[in-house]
Every structure is written in C-alpha cells, then in structure tokens.
Length: 100
Image (cartoon, rainbow, N blue to C red; front, side, top):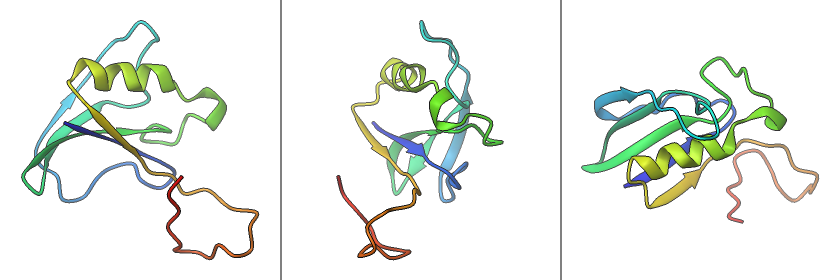
C-alpha cells in the first residue's frame, strides 16, 4: 500500500473512493490527523495530513514518528510525502517539481 503525506495546503485528497477514516494510537502519540484509507486509480492508499486538518502543527511539532508508525501498522510499504515549501534558489519557479 502507498502512504501519502500531504503538506501545507493538501489536507484532503480529491479522487479517493471507498473512504474510511482510521484513528490510531502509536507509541509516539497520535498521528497529525486521522488516516484516510481509500482507492486511487484502483490502488489502495493511506493519507495523512502532515500539519493536521486545521494546520495546527507547525513543522517543529509535527508528530512525524507517529505518522510513520501509523502507516506501518496499516501495511504501508512506500511513502510519498508532498510539500509546498519556498526555495532560496531563484532558478525554481512556482509550479516547478523537485525530486530529492
């Protein structure tokens, strides 16, 4: 299963079908949001909003370990983390896609 972590501005995923929200407790506390399970293009995915549904977690307080533990508990094997951060490199323009 693919786990998707939504960054700033991505609090819910459009296009998911057969949605189910799961509340999990981990040794590291609660994940930053409920885990949304669903299908995307016929594939099972799990989605977590990194900063919470109301953007209540600043970067220094995001429960990263709880988020990843929750994914592991649900059988996630790969994680795609999406972020929308600024850049100090002037060659990057709005809309550019960067792979680290």
